Image (cartoon, rainbow, N blue to C red; front, side, top):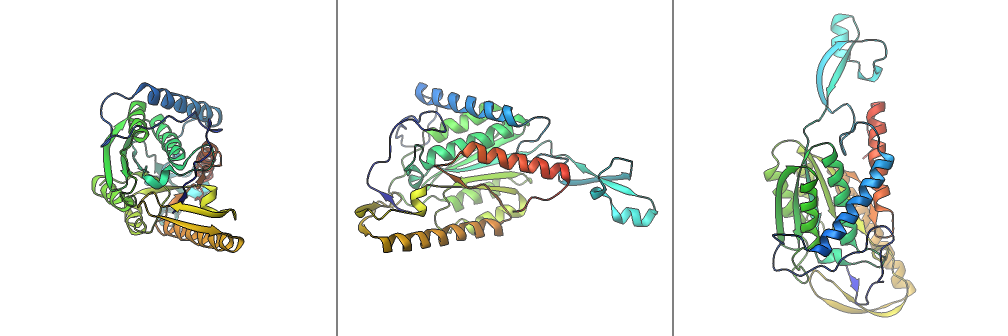
Length: 331
């Protein structure tokens, strides 16, 4: 992924509170959150909770709503039971109709894997990819906290990986967001070690749970680790993109910089280069989605130009409808 050396537009974002300038610490921030960062996080939390309160009603279990996914005991059918839950094996043996109860996943262990590496600092809209990733992580976190589930995090900044052990409650979500708001510098240190972060989750989370991965998914080293993680856990992949990563206008001679490696190159962007760029970008997007599908991950694609919160809320609503209807969501 490359970024232009020209600065991106300034001014307050249209879809989230104004971003704050990030400090450049040597490592992951420890101790009290700076006042400016804390105020930004409070505004983000307030906005997310207002939207969630307005569209999500009734009992639900964060991003895993419904009757549950684990099979429980069978019991005799009663009028009003969902016929799609009929246990045909028991029914055939007893000549009476039985339905299979489902065990609700009340005690869910959830993990956030969030990429805040150098390539995530790119953006040509009001928000950059890192801000959109933080907003997505906040939404997933507060949805998880609503159901009183425990949430852990593995944060990635280039080669650096930071693990936050699972805890319940909104204070845990706030602590994760504070760490995301002040990552260590990663420019020129190489691509995000997303594969290492996924393997770390696999080593720590031995119990079946839920893993949400928020990244631009650069490269392909993450594909196999994501597949291994998907064997044990339910995966939600949230790829973040910017419109300029999918198409670049023919603006003539520009200097392109790879923030992960620091390498730069001058390129004359003509109409022909624009067409080729769009083709390669589309192929790259298809490759990413194919890798996620192989891991049996659900996918929410977010763009710096879109309503990130609306996209996540619509995903949760679809899951709730599918759970009530007893169907299966398409991957």
